[in-house]
Amino acid sequence: MTDDAALIPLVAEPLPDGFSRSRVRRSLLVLAGIAIIVVAVLALLPGLASVRHAFRGADPGWIALAVLLELLSCASYVLVFRAVFCQRMSWRTSTEIGLSEQAANSLLSVGGAGGLALGAWILRRGGIPPDRIARRTVAFFLVTSIASVGLLAIGGAALALGLLSGPSDRVTLGAVPAVAGVGAIALALAAGRIARSRAARSRHRRVRTLLAATGDGVAEAVSLLRSPEMWAGSVGYLIFDVAVLGVCFPAFGNPEPPIDALVLAYLIGQLGGLVPLPGGIGGLDLGLLGALLLYGVDATGAVVAVLAYRAVLLAVPAAVGLPALASLRRRLHREDHDIRACAPGEEVEILGLGAVRMAAPGWGAPSR
Image (cartoon, rainbow, N blue to C red; front, side):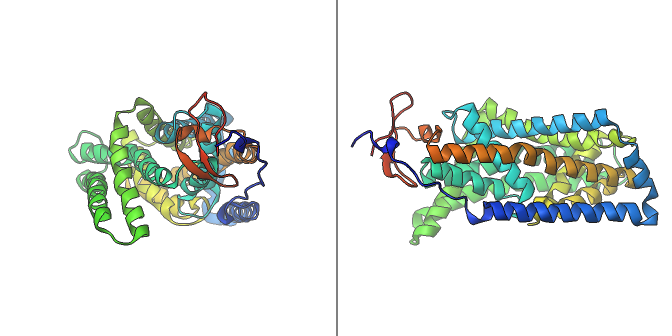
């Protein structure tokens, strides 16, 4: 083997079809069209006078705070990405990948999985073995969900037991989320054990690979529960985003709902974001609005807050994520990145270079 592999010029690797420039442009046009329709409806329908009045009274200070909180949520996502995938990467590379995933989640109609798919392509392009990417992607999905599911179970139980104030039927409105949260955790653990046992017996390579990635990913997610960085990122990613929704109430002169109603409505409403629409438009909005109304929040305040929250949730990750993706693509083309440091001593297949043995950090270029 020689050290000349790093000197071989590469042809720029295009993004996958789902993340091409034309696809992003189409998503932006769709979102712009939806925004125009929403503005037209708010402006023209006579029954929405209170909503229009609330938007005219927007407080720039509160809106600036909402933007700052969403930036902190994006930073927390980067933190948990780095904790799960590789702490040998530089902060620049980790940040660019994490923010690129956030932009994909905001803009593309892939039901919330766009960021994970884009991140997997970037890591594969950088030289990480596919099996490691697969199991760490499963682990990443689980650890970014653990805060939401755990808080759903705890908050629901507290509401059902009367430890938190709530509507008259708080027992039902608390018990259902609590059971759902506990059930989701139990289901994930059981799925991991079943997948690992079935993988050992499967005769089909693709099925075996998928089952092994699922089982190993669940096991790695459990092991990551000991990581302070993972907890800081996962909890911060959730709490800062909930705070954005909360801030959008006083930003337009509406009283903020009780914290328990806000959190539970947020967690339940997020299920609507799984609908495969650009940025979750429609599914997430209706889910949040319906959950807020179910927990007794004023209708006008809920509509205004949800629309403002969705605007921040779409605009901020896209504004920071698209430039990060452009920068990362240039660095991938020049091989000016440190993704391969996450696989020291392993021989992996890098797109454009072929089989390359990864050098340990600080030991020079990869060899082929």
